[in-house]
Image (cartoon, rainbow over all chains, first blue to last red):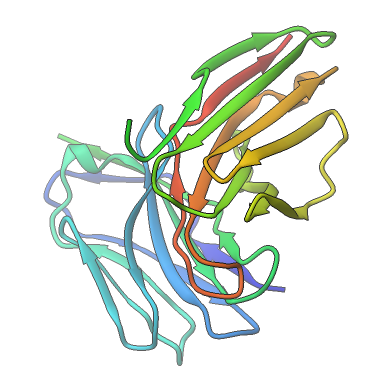
Length: 113
Length: 115
């Protein structure tokens, strides 16, 4: 079945460090790909998305490129801030009746001042 | 109110209690979802409603009973829960049918503790 794999956390960085969170997927169809972020005590918020190969999603300084050849959608940010501390979820959606949204396990990021 | 709202935000209940979680979406979407988020476990999809009809039930125990009276409201009725049911319950909504791409919008969740 469809699945999403993320790098194990927690990830701890100093402020202004470069961030990469790896995400790879397995899908029978042609998925759309997402990154969601969950701040403490809140629900999930859509961070960025890409709907076809080579698309780059970006938001709030975060970027991820849909790589069909490597089935990856790695999240990057050039300079993290303390306020970026949260849990990040990679997800995919395929056009399939029923369960069409699959989330990865999440990666906890802590940014220290 | 905008987006997806959930009430209550926190709930403590005994194993013999009956309670209900409520979700309301103000986005005009036609699909709604219940997820369970436990510590150190992936998000678990529990129920999916599209156009007010249930289209997914991932082997959820019968002590969880969903209800979708209209496209804006979703309930999760709880009865004789177990301590392992303690978790964050998230509601989400999306637009479009389940055969096409559709991003999900989440509520803040209800933190449930079963004593």
